[in-house]
Each structure stands twice: as C-alpha cells, then as structure tokens.
Amino acid sequence: MKKLIVTVLAAALTLTACGGSDSASSTLRVGTLSDAPPNIYLENGNYTGFDNELLKAIAAKQNLKLEFAATDFSALLGQVASGRFDIASSAIAQTDERKKTVDFSAAYDFETMSIQAKQGTPVTDEQGLAGKRVAVIQATVGDHWLTSTVPAAQAVRFPDYAAALTALKSGAVDAYILDQSIAEKNVTGNPDAKLVVVKSFVTDVPHGFAVKKGNAELLRKIDDGLKQVISDGTWLKLHQQFLPTAPVPAGFQG
Image (cartoon, rainbow, N blue to C red; front, side, top):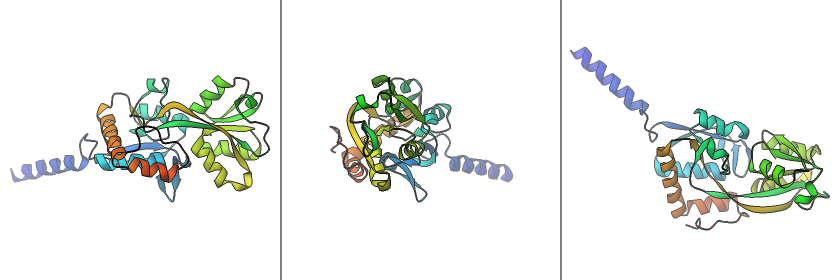
C-alpha cells in the first residue's frame, strides 16, 4: 500500500512539472527570422527587434513562456499551421490569403513599404521598376505588391532578407522591395554599399502574430497582453527604440 501511494504521488508530481496543456506553464515555440533588423533579428544569441521584444512584453503580462527559433519567412506560416511553431513573429502582414492558413492576433502595427536601390539609380518611383530585376522576399506583401503593381518588373524572389540584400549590393538586382524600417537599417548598416531609399509608402495592411487555426485561447492571451502593453506605454517605448522614423498608428499612443 505504501509503495502504491509513493507511485501515485510521483506520477502527480510528473504531471505538475510538465504543466499539462496549460500554455501559461508550458513553453511556446516562436518562429521568427534572424536577419531582418530592426523588426526581427538575432543579436548576441538573443532574438530581438521590435516584434520579438513586443511579444516578450506581451508574454510577461500573460505569464507565457517563449522559446524562439529562426526559419525562412516563406516556410513560417506553414510551420505554424503544422504545429512546429505555436506563434509566428515576423512583421507578418495580415492578408486574406494568409488568413486561410493561420489565425492572427489583433493588429500591433501597419505595413510601410520601401523601394530600395543603390545611389545613382535611375529608379525614382514604382514606374521606374518596369523592365528591372527587383528583389522581393518570397510570399511577402512586397512580393505581391510588385507583381500586382508593376507586372512589367522582373521579380527575383529570395527566401530571406540577407540574400536579397547581398544581391542588391552586388548589382545582381536593380532594386529591392521591403519594409521601410529594414530598408533604412540597410542604409545605415552598409555605408560602403551606398544604398538609398527611393520611395516609401504606408499601407492599410496590419501586422499580427500568427497562431494555428482554432487556437482561440492563445489568441485571447496575446490580444489581452497587447492591450496591456499599449495601455502602459510599453508599445510606444519599443516603437521609439526600434522604429523611431516610422509613423505611430492611431490608438497606439497608450
């Protein structure tokens, strides 16, 4: 009888340590990128940037534990849908097509795109992209924008931001369509490449954290935490830290 009691207690302790299915006590796997500052990047072994630090702040409010890992953007939403990751954090624009694959949190920012090129470029706006080789990150808003807005441009698709930037710097492509904040970081971070932001434009496409379809409990916690970090000024502080030149959308002032 004594042996039976010990066995039962040991089993109960094991279940408690594992946390069962409670997301507040288990570790959530976050898929992100390692090479797209200032939104999402790896620095000294730490996944940081506006989006990741915001998610960490949300998790702290909601007692969620996070574990980050890098992947290619083109594979990220499929990996959330398959259960490899619980959350995707990558300045993800919420499009109707993507909503067929995953569910999104409330908006935590809006997409601002840029056309980037090298100094001396003849490209001054989107019309100048016709007939040019233009880098885009596969399956992003920039990819869709280029093919729908300038079908005469030759879209050159890359799996990640680092590869696209290398192609622009080497002259393998004539221009590059990407988030404004990342384009500006490319200019300051690569002075020898003589990069310029030709034109920027704000869209009405919201950014959101993505979760597996049907995971309403996790979405609710993310959304509740987002409200908390907006209300206490954390959102604005992180935005000023990582995205000082980007516009602050209405409703995010705290």
